[in-house]
View 1 (tube, rainbow, N blue to C red):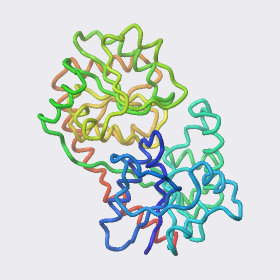
View 2: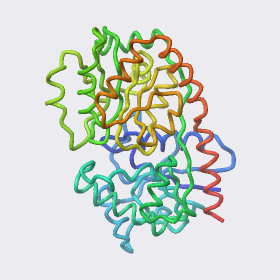
View 3: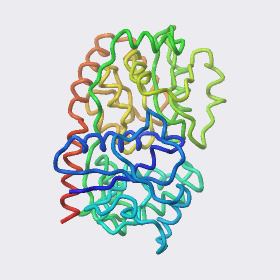
Length: 365
């Protein structure tokens, strides 16, 4: 079977978790002997940054991204078809929200539909783009792959045919970080004190203002808060940062090697997101043996299971209390660390590729 994967998110200004998922899926599929995968993207003058380099060959259509997305979503007859770049394929897999024009059956991955619950989570242009892509997926996709049961339920609530939905959880690389790597990363980023860690794009649904206010309530002295992740949209942390600025390290974008070391060096990873499609950072923390505090109200609860402390993401005191429990109780921290490692081992990219391949076979038939 020959499959084309859209990989345009590798060139996005903020590639984020969708790019990680697409890259890792492409790598896992490439290792199989029952599928030939080829990437497809818009026209670019430069390759993506090394951290976001696709592991498979990518063919490019003639249009730049903004033009390509508009043409695809307008369904215009002269919109570039995927096959014009890739040659004949059995299935086209849209790994992001941009719904491609193609002759072959289209399989779409939907990580989340958070923007439908709260349009302020995205820009006005983003809302229009996401809405159109979601409508096309609902009306035209042969199958829709959901990263979690929570996302599947949301899709059903938004009118998707339940018979077309398949739950395909994401995976994580089981690559624990060495002590030397942790020491280098902490030195590089000036982290002398024990710290609570957060990793993610700065955007409203990540709930960072409440995390900052919750951290201000933590009574444990000598503990800092470290925020790693690129600036996204519609979020300013200035007011909530001001009272605790001396205890907070805002690192911005961090390369993947440093990121894993920062996960490993943390006392606890806190991810109180309001809405997630999956929650890769939760798994990335667990792989490193770092205790996790995350939201009970979204898919991160599915990922963490009983290996993390689940809190109401809207309750700042509950977040603070959970952080203090881990920081003040070494036995609990050790229990969560071991449980998290075992939990993370259940989520592999090979399993993701296996479930995805089953969907390709079904769609092609």
